[in-house]
Figure: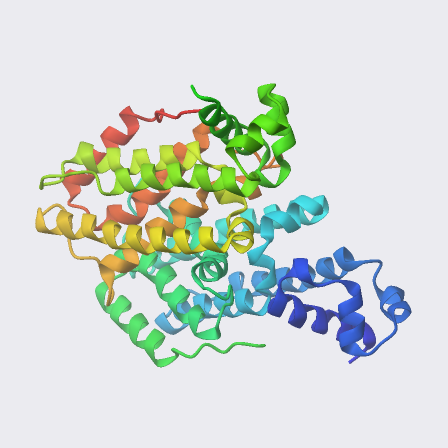
Amino acid sequence: MTNRERIIEESRRLMNEQGAHNIGTTQISESLKISPGNLYYHFKNKEDIIQALFDRFEIEIRAVIAEDVVPPISTSRFVAFYQRSMSVAWKYRFIFGGLLHLLRKDNALALRYRDLQAWALENLASITIQLVRDGNMVKPRGENGHNSLALNTWLIWSNWIRHIQISSETYQVESTDMVAGLIQIFDVLSPYLDEQFERSARRTLARNAALDLED
Amino acid sequence: MTNRERIIEESRRLMNEQGAHNIGTTQISESLKISPGNLYYHFKNKEDIIQALFDRFEIEIRAVIAEDVVPPISTSRFVAFYQRSMSVAWKYRFIFGGLLHLLRKDNALALRYRDLQAWALENLASITIQLVRDGNMVKPRGENGHNSLALNTWLIWSNWIRHIQISSETYQVESTDMVAGLIQIFDVLSPYLDEQFERSARRTLARNAALDLED
């Protein structure tokens, strides 16, 4: 690993553990036992590091959502899709707790987040549109059924970590909490799924209950 | 209005406009044209004012959720219930943007919020259980269908304002945004509703598109 890479990884680890607002460049360089000068050679400041982490978060979440897929969508691919999106949320969980604060402080980041969100919502809707085409889902109710479903899954996905933090005395998220979040997302989609497809998806979910999470 | 009352109301208005983190006791007393001493006679500090506001928020949201109801639940009562919960969220919208931050700073408030949340989730589940009993809803899918549905509506309700803030260049919420949030909540419940009940509820929703919002 290059030093730049080590700084990014250590920042992610520390911010996930203690929250982005509690971590500064001093802690990062101390934790890595490198000089502040070495850190500043690679990054102007903490915001610069956060942007580099957001780059990776964005690449990974876009890769999950836009995974090259040939229809029809199988249950295992359907489940894997939401599982992987939870894994990415976990890996960059520091982003979600203080998201509003992070965006308010960095307008370029705010613009990027809004672009990512708009893009994700469109692609989430494409997935359910494809499921309907495949005959594995009925058209969601409401005027903009697919968009509304996409937004609701996005709302739950993007607020799950913060919800767990708010609900916990220690404000900590545990890896096991992510499985519960996955079920919440699945339950928004499940009423529209073909019964057999749904049962099969739930079995796959139960089998892979332990998500593949990166610390 | 007593001075105590005026301080509470003005704090709510200012915090809703500018965010709780941007408002201090100085702005509140200046805005009311009262002396700081007058304010401190009624409240020890800003946290004390926020607690008084949370008292009211809690009373109002509990009143909405636990409204004395004789079954069956009619469509208009069903719709009014979610409309009123959006009105309360709007009235105290400063709470939602910086919730995690507010709770971290005040442990007593955090405990109260978690109690309120647990109580609300239980009562939200009771509503859908009653709808099933009334024959206006089918049992939600999943192992803990009613609880999962309650949690999903709660997640959307409690994160809607923050979602709008994050999505907006000005970080402002407009009263019209609240109607869109109401539809999102309704769309989580709607797949399980009896078709006629759902159509009737959507008509009622469309008729009362302009929510009764207090500024």
